Image (cartoon, rainbow, N blue to C red; front, side, top):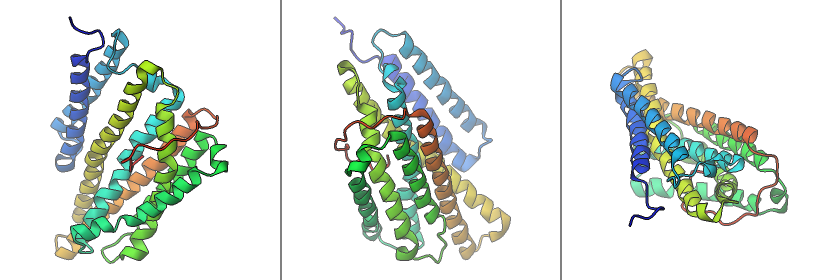
Length: 294
């Protein structure tokens, strides 16, 4: 006999189809533009399918995602931080790799090693989270500060040009961005899984990890679209199609993605500060790694 707690296939199909449609829709806009009917159709379908998924969860006795899990005010705010931050932070890893290999001429090994300064910033942020004053700081203040710190790190990267250097122009932005990751990861992970019912513990953990993965997929699609469109507009406006002009336009696309990421991070800090209750954070536990973008 079928178990009452078996996986609900229609719910899983709606969620997968909705998220897939959104990712494809955003990816399509990178080459076809925001006015492309196919892209608009997939984006609209994605929203409709996810709305149907949420409606179905309200009606089922054993939903795939009990809405009480993201519906908790603190937990919902923490999940917003995880999702939106992952969208924004993926530009650091994606476009800096492009920049270091295509502009600075780094090998794949060298460009991977070049991300070590982020670890230093993360260590600094983690040291702050383990301090006594941090334990007495309301989560809303932490998220607000981390949002603006992450935005500042992204703004430092918007200064990149085809003639920028690694140590002077990339490393400072990496370190500041790493501090933001160290500050926000533990608190968002704890709040996203804290105080759930025993029967919801697995769902809460899975939803947190899913939010990270979904944010990464959407981040790549959205920010690649932003960079592609900015590069195209720059070429059409005044840079021409010469090798120098193409390089300038390509870097302009990267820095535009960094600017959008800075706006997303700052807006995330403000939004979650408004949603989050002004109470003290729960006791910190070790974050689940890898979790680089929360």
